[in-house]
Image (tube, rainbow, N blue to C red; front, side):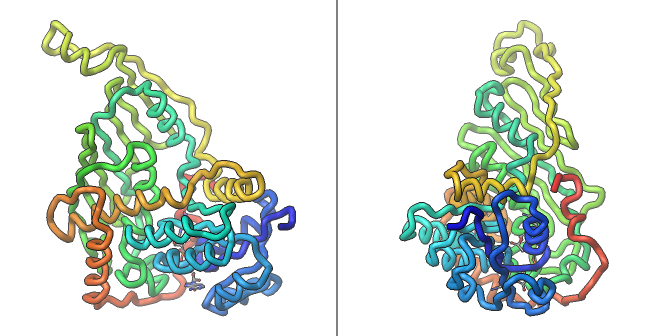
Amino acid sequence: MSKNVRLGIVGIGNMGSSHLGQITAGKIARLEIGAICDEDPAKLAKYPNIKGFADYKEMFKSGLIDAVLVATPHYGHTSIGIDAINAGLHTLIEKPLSVHKADCQKLIAAYEQRSRKDLVFAEMFNQRTDLRYRKLRELLKSGELGEIHRVNWIITDWYRTEQYYASGGWRATWAGEGGGVLMNQCPHQLDLMQWLFGLPKKVRASCGFGKFHDIEVEDACTAYLEYANGATGVFITTTGEAPGTNRLEVATDRGRIVIEGDDLQWIRTTMPVRQHLRECPGGFSQPDRWEVRIPVNGRGGQHNEVLGNFVDAILDGKELIGPAPEGINGVELGNAMLMSALWDRTVELPLDSAAVAAEYQKLIAKSRHKTKVVKGGGDDFGNSFKGIAK
Ligand SMILES: NC(=O)c1ccc[n+]([C@@H]2O[C@H](COP(=O)([O-])OP(=O)(O)OC[C@H]3O[C@@H](n4cnc5c(N)ncnc54)[C@H](O)[C@@H]3O)[C@@H](O)[C@H]2O)c1
């Protein structure tokens, strides 16, 4: 391999072209573009100086690239990802890893059976670089917070308009996108939920299907979670609320952590809450507490940090921020929410991946919705990253 990693991007849409722009601007050390691929010739025509392919398999065989970034609609993550791994190319998949658990299992199996053992296989978990979540994870792992009692995440600031859904025929359909807010916007938070707190044992959810938009998939979800230690969780999301909220609240045995806006605030009890409630002689007094403001300097390097880390993993063997096999967990959590709503019952994890895949087949077979594609809209894709550093 040359001293730089030569990347081939599959899918030069919103996200693929954003990555392409950062890389060609030299923002990621030791990463260069070897080639690009899109089945839409108009996307390739915008980059006459970069070798373009209509068929990703041709790009994989070209000898022009060492690594692949898959930034296509979601079902392609599995099929293109498997082909990239089998072609012996380092592979970075955009979120979500796949639409459902069985597809994640197929993709991970391809990686586990790969012929080249040094292949780097990563997922674009850019929100894992956010220093607020990193700090919380550090605190959780250190044991300083004690046992978790309750987790609440209200993540309703994923507002999207009807025009957004009309910007691509694959969007907001069971066959094209595989879901709505749980599949496109929330994979970040679903991954962070499992990264921070592990997976729950039980999930009960209610979804609104086309509640706010003219779409067939879910654009709202409220889920109740139960963890093995008895902790509970509530996860609320939608693309139909403005102004939205992004508030993560964690009640622990050593007080309460809140991440909202730029702040990570910890109201720390001076003794464990369970000990206080057992031993306090008074009936109404509360444990003493300190207000701890934890300095957090920004939201991390986001997408570019993950790209840089992918390069460092390939060239220097550095540990990955987002190993792709971990992506199955957030997908399973989102699948559990969706299945619970569709089946109208509590579902237990681990999920039966074949049952989820069969439900997807039914949804796709019954699907009547065709997203009406309307070009334009005059909005900037960059607006979707408002509030997080690029
Ligand atoms: N990490 C993030 O913050 C973030 C943000 C937005 C989107 N995404 C993810 O990026 C991916 C793409 O989303 P988008 O908004 O850019 O979609 P998009 O519709 O704008 O772009 C997808 C592109 O893929 C091309 N394509 C589809 N199938 C192909 C194939 N088989 N071979 C070659 N090209 C193909 C399409 O022609 C299109 O240009 C999705 O997985 C999405 O979830 C991630």
